[in-house]
Length: 199
Image (tube, rainbow, N blue to C red):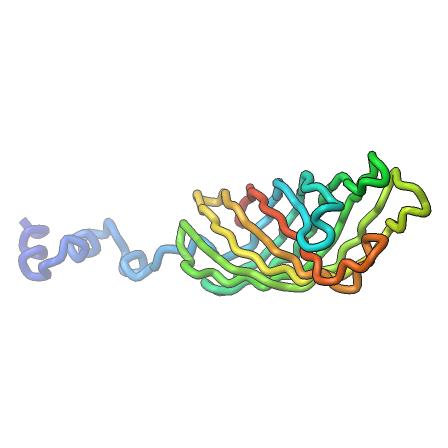
């Protein structure tokens, strides 16, 4: 009877539960935690290739990576990323050459919709080391260190502490000499799936 009287006076079932001690006032005011905020650790896997003058000389190949990130704000975070790839060379003068790339970078991430389904954009700066193997010394190909400006987009699906997603990236290369002739304007692209967890 007391509960019915409280309901009639307050007009709110939540107020009745609060008055009977089932829900405290602090729980009534507590917002649902953001699914995108916090630290994360993810692994990436997919494919990577090149455009421009490098495209006919380097085949797309398997790509991998690791991302450690933190997102203190709903719409902005930072990522420290390691990425790698293995690509076969396709220069018609020889066969069997391979380029293995390893790189690190720092990205700034912008969440378009900070929800359980999270589309986002990112960009940053990185450096990569490419190791060339199984090619003649006179081919003009050789190991190289070069810079990358990555621009990318992705979508993340937040399932509790787990994170599933996919991202695509276009990297603008600078200070690179990967081939025997000028390859200025060449770009690096990749598409990868993401599996990780938030803490």
